[in-house]
Image 1: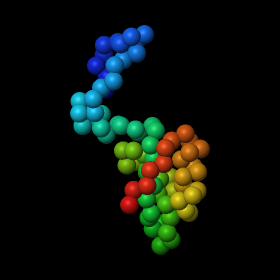
Image 2: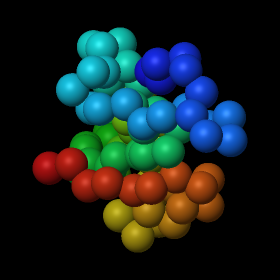
Image 3: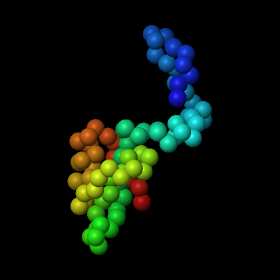
Image 4: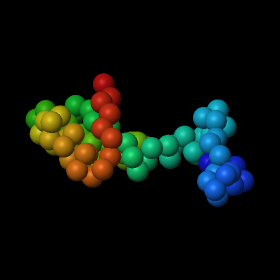
Length: 81
């Protein structure tokens, strides 16, 4: 994702989002972002929790509990509808 050249102090320079490959976009936010969306589980309304790449990582009975679980795991919750 980065250019490989170190900037001042050994830090790598930022990369323009336009330079990201399809694979980089697929991994973008993978460890930092989880999204929630309403689903039916065995005929009961629930909230699904997914990683940024769409991988299911959990479910909760309501949005408040889903968001609490995401925050507890040091991720940023995002609502998808």
